[in-house]
Length: 521
Image (cartoon, rainbow, N blue to C red; front, side, top):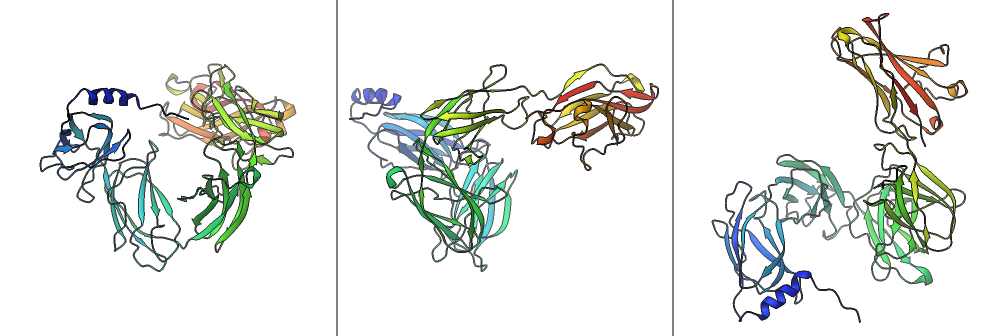
């Protein structure tokens, strides 16, 4: 028999209950808005964190001054305070965790977080208003699905909700609308004040359905689907996209071409899978999808200096290059990762998180997996650029500088470039590059990026650009030489220096420092 460990506060509560005679129990306090003004009509609810279910409570609202005296049976609770439904209030729901109630509990002053009102009108494809569309707000800062009073569109298709004045995702779920199947949708917003999203017309919806089974053809419950647009990879908002107790799923999407990624969510050692290019113009059945048993591939991703790397991406390919779909395939805060892979000889790749860190990719070929397999990674160094030399001054005695921007010079980084700063405003600069003659013919100066001139002695090539800044003003000139990195540049090393035409420089030229760059995998 399994026993659950009780909440750490329950033991204290139990002891307190046995030590007191029978009596009424209360929570008291005052609810105020973000200006310190008492809020009338706040609804108070409790969630029992112990056993016994949610109890009845009495006087569960605030008076005209925001005060409350609410009768609650003794226990351990989460207490929530819900302001009046918008537009009567733009404040947000707040919750207080682990409230022990024995006798009278004074909760003091509860301050409701400020928010902004978001409103709109929802219509069906024929232009008629839609009632009963459910709205959700995801706080993109915390990832929380916020509690929303008034979270359904009314009989006229109108809605008004309160949301944080920050980055959010507004989700519209029409699954409760009777008589028609409509595709859910979502918007990214960043309101700073009251905002109307105008009229939102929902598209006709079609169902992608099927049954998921595991080894032995046993129906697999709670497998999760992520649906994205084929080609762009943009993920759709698809509520109710997990399988039921019979392994069945039915996901509503608009017409289009989609990619479905399937993952177990309860820790089962099953290999994720992908169904590509699902064309939807009517309801589509994917039939029976069988998930493959697999093994854990796990370890720690570290940098070349031994420090853990959080957010590193893990990729695995089968023989021949077919990718394995991995679920939760990023390293955690201490660099640890764990993914489910099939048995066999696999190629594994570890990528740094984005391009901000001076790290490269590590590829480990031919990893044999016949059971749970440990595999650590050490990401190589990929410096943004190594400066040397001091350059020479121009007008005002200022030496212009050359620095890398856009992160590591790693394949796939389209934002990489070299920036000239501190130069004579409005002047002209020439970026001079040198590299070994063996690689000069392979270095891909693309017409829209670098326009190669005739090679200079010593393997130099140059590109000229006009500096920003007021003409003739010292130190205000700058320009960026864009240098997007593709796979063909990997392994090439260059040395760069910018020359700025400046009448007060040595020989009418001010020179930057040198910058050595090695393009990485």
